[in-house]
Structure formats: structure tokens, C-alpha cells
Image 1: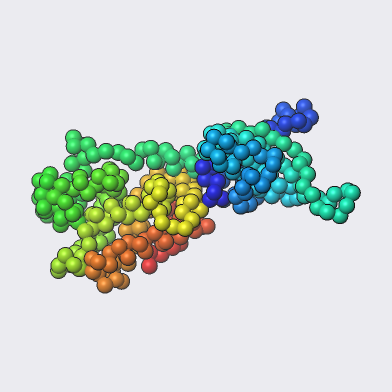
Image 2: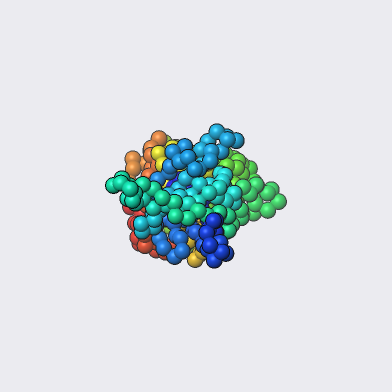
Length: 334
């Protein structure tokens, strides 16, 4: 249901032109990334249809683009939905239930409209609410010089417990894998989220964190990768997978896979508020595994990083993934 992503949500449909009893009844329709659910029945949606093929569906003259129609088949009947705008909240411009049957006067098959509906947006899906709430809480948080440097100091202490933390701006931060003397410069792109997930990893599995940090180092700059910046890049990969970075993906069908991954993470967040942090740790394990198998040359790091995306995406889309703690068991890191 990748093409429906802007319109995912719960709608209410009401019959128009029917009996008083039908007109008084509202039916609930859920458009989910796994299919449509209408009056308790599941159906996989059809493909996107150009509205110009259907004379009864009006065109949106404002932007010279035909209204997008989604079709879903329920037993012998098909539901056609024409959306009113580019967002779920704009509701539906028209909805019809049609059947294709043999015409009484000849043997040809013809389409007949059985019911028409008016439709309005009701609410987002539960997983949508979770992931949107997570995004508002964790994304686009700017660096705060009053409080965030202390988090950097804590990350250093967890990484090198026997070494005194360097000054706020110091070349020594390179030991942790920052590329600038001022680590805040490296964090600028991913915001505070990258620092928080690195801290989560260092606190919750310090032994593995320190092992990965050690393995990232080499004898020269050519046979190592900057560990902290590698983690920041992993955060970007995860945000791209989850469609939080529009326009960044070079995939052929980013929305199709992204909608499924967003749905999966939304469900995982409902069970565990730290699901993204655990997903980051899993992705770092994939990165470390790929680095260990590679030539361990910095020039090959991007190739290793590129291997993280398909593994994480496959894990999120695994049909048996119900709890984030099961992810490594279902889809091993190597």
C-alpha cells in the first residue's frame, strides 16, 4: 500500500442516496500499509489508478493533477476511493462501491455502481500516532550549549573510563571517532538524536560498545573509520529507511518499503519506548560485522555502511517481529 502513505488513517464512510437507515450508519475504513480493513474484512489494495480513466471522478483543477484513486476488492464488490487532497485530513472527495456483472440485455460484462459514500478522516492509525509522537520528541532538536556538552563528557567517560575528558574543543575527541575538534559540529546534521543513541549503546552494553570502538581503530588513518561519525551515519541510514529524510533515498520504490518499516517501528514503539535505540544498536552490530569482513580500509567504509540498510529493512519487515528484543534472533547481524 506504498502509494497510499499520505492518506493512511481511519476514515468514516456514510452512504449517500440510500435508505434512511443506511444514511444514518457510518462504516469505519482503515487504510493501513498492510492493506485496507473495511467493516472487519481484510483486503489488499489494487494499484494506483489515473482518475482521468473514470469520468465520474472529478479532476483537481488547482494543480492540474487527477485525484488519486485506490481500489480494493471485497469478495465480488470493489471499493473505489478518490481522495480530496494530498493529506489524510482532507478526507475523500468521492467513494463508490461497484460490481462487474453480465448485462441483462447481452453477454458483455459491465460495471455497476451499487452504493456511493461521503467520507471524512477520523483519526490516524495507532502505529502512526506512535511514530509521529516519537518524531516530534526526538528529531530537529538543536544543540544546547548549556546542557548537551555534559552528555558528551559522559560519552567520553563511558568510552575511556581511565582517561580524563578533553576540553570542549580538542583534537583528542578524534580518539572517539569525531572528525572535528568540536564534536558538536559532527552532530549538527543528526541533532541530539545521534548523541542520545550512542549514549544508550555505551550505557546498556558497554563491553560491546568498547569492543566496536577498539575495532574501528587501525595503525594508520587508511585502515580505520571514525567510530562516532560512523554511528551518526547509521542514524541517517535509519531515518532514511523510515522516511524521515524525504528526497534522500535513491531506492526505486522508497515509499513502498518505507511505509512498511514505519508501520513496524510504530508497533515496536508501542511495546517499547526505546525501540529506536535498540534498532540503532542492532544496526551498529551489522556495521561492525561488515567492517570485520571487509578489507578494513577507510575507502571501503561507505560500501560497508551501504550494507546496513538492506539488513535493517529486512529485519523491520520480518513478519514475526513483534518485540524489538527479538530482532537479532530473527535476522542475525551477519
